[in-house]
Length: 464
Image 1: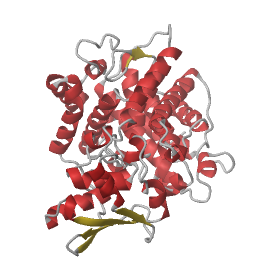
Image 2 (image 1 turned 90 degrees about the vertical axis):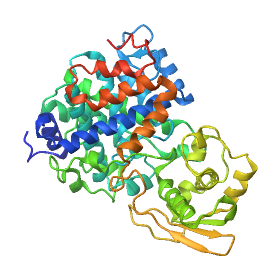
Image 3 (image 1 turned 90 degrees about the horizontal axis):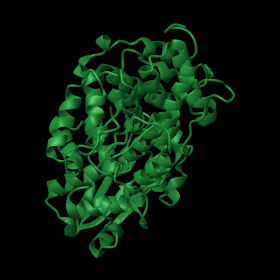
Image 4 (image 1 turned 45 degrees about the vertical axis):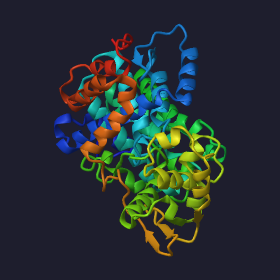
C-alpha cells in the first residue's frame, strides 16, 4: 500500500499510519490542544446531564464484573474503553456546547476515544495529539466526500453519527499503532456499521446526544477488531454498490474531495467552537440580533418583529414554537432569539432551565417568524430582519458566526468558556490544572496524568 495508490480508505490509512509528530505544523498542534480543552469542558459539564447518566447506567450494566481502566469524565467510575468512549461522547454532546464542523461534531466522537485509551498505559501526550488530528481529519474528509454537511444531512442522516465513526476508528488505529494495512481494515470495519438519523427532531428524543457516543464506541471497537486480525472492506467509501458514499449520499457524493490536500491541509482547521449552548445553525442569527441591539441601543421591549429569512431546510429544523424539553429549545429559532433578546446572551443558563413558560419569553417568541423566502448557499446562514417599534427596519446577515474558523474564539474567550463549565464542578484549582495539563500535552509522558484530572478531586482511582 502506498500514499499515491489504492482505494480512498487505503490512501487515508497510508498517510495517517505513518505521519510523524515532528512534521505537523505548530499551529495545527496548537489547534488540537484548543479543541481538546474545549471538548473536555463540554464533556465535564455534560456528565451531570440526564442523558449522560442514562448512558452510564446502561454501560455499567453491560460491564458488570468486567475490568475497566478508562475514566468516565466528571464521575467516580471507570469502564472498559469502548463503553467509556460511548458514555463520554454522549456527555460531550449533551448540552450542545461541543465543537462543530468536521463531521458535524468531531470532538464528541474523537476525544472520548483518545482519552479512553489512556487507561491502557503507554500513551504519551504526543501520541494523543496525533490521534486527535487523525480523527478530526478522517471524520471531516468522509463528510466532504459525502457531498458536504447540508446535502448529506438533508437526506436524513446525522453526519456526526454516520461520518464520525471513521474519525473514531482513525484515532483508535493511531493509538494502537496499526500499520497501514490494519489501519485501512479499521476504517472499513467502522464504515460497515455506522449510522444516525434525524428522527429525534420530531419529538426531542435523546438519541441525538447518543449519536457521537455510539460513533466513538463503534470506531474504537472497529480498530480493536482490526488489531486482532479482522479485515474490513477496502473500498468501503467508494464501492458502487453498498459503499458508504453510494448508500448514504447517492447522487450528491463528491469522493474526489476525500483526499484533497491530504498531509498538507489538516481538517481540524475547519472545525469551530460554540459560544452559545444551542444548535450551530442558530448562532449566526443570534450574532445578528446581538449586533443590531448594540448598534441601535434597542432593548427587547423595543423589538416589534424578528423575521428570519431562510429556506425550507431552515424552517424544518428551526421553526419551533412548542417547547417540551431542552433539545426543542436548542433547535428553536423562536426560543433562542427570545431569550437572547431578553437576556443579552444564549449561554447554558438560558437553556438548562427552560424559560418558555415565562410570559415575557412567550410574548417574544410570538414575535419571531421563520420564512422560507431565500435560496441559501451550502455554507450560508439565514439573515435576520429586525423590525423596531419606532418603525425602523434592519437586516443583517452574518457570514461567519463567532467561533467559526474564520472568526474563532480568542484564547481569553475560550478560557472564559472553559472556566464557566469546569469550575462549578471541579473548582478553580482543578480547572487550572486541567488547562495547564492540556497546554503542555506534548511534554506529557503518560496520558493518565491528564485523565486523573477529569474526575472530582481524590476520585481518580480507576485512572492508573
